[in-house]
Length: 191
Image (cartoon, rainbow, N blue to C red; front, side, top):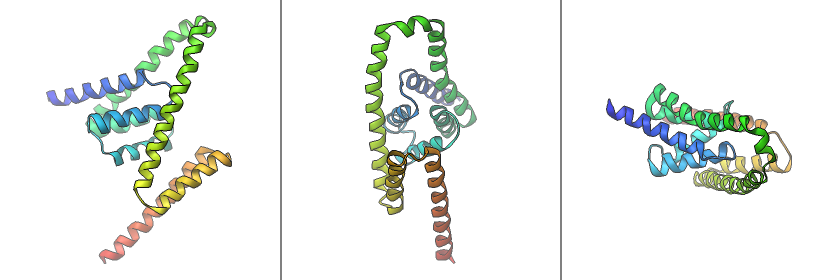
């Protein structure tokens, strides 16, 4: 039983530190989660993290919380999900509570304004890293359908200003259709 508590503690601690040190939104924390849970702790495979990213992006709600639910459940069931979510939501709640008390001082402080500008550059670099890693994973599949979907999704969102939700739902539909075709082919091969 001690091992279960040890895993829960590691899960809480990891999520808490990642959440406390992450500025810039969901994609930034996903990149850090990949480094922590795939590369460092080896709790997940690269493909699993890619699946987690896809699911969390498609589901309603904050991406880090969605990822915490899935990763926590994968590691320790319902207790793991609750532990991971708690570790993820506590730092922003604490930070936002402090900022709200001192909002007027933060808003007019030139040092904080400069710090926020500098953090934007760091956030952009981390998001770029996530995009490169995710694109690399799609290219590794060597599936023309996935690569074409990635390119078309980029063109649709960046050049044609199509809503991300429309792109996600369209890709989901194409993915489900591809899965259905694959299952039918396998069923015919077995028969």
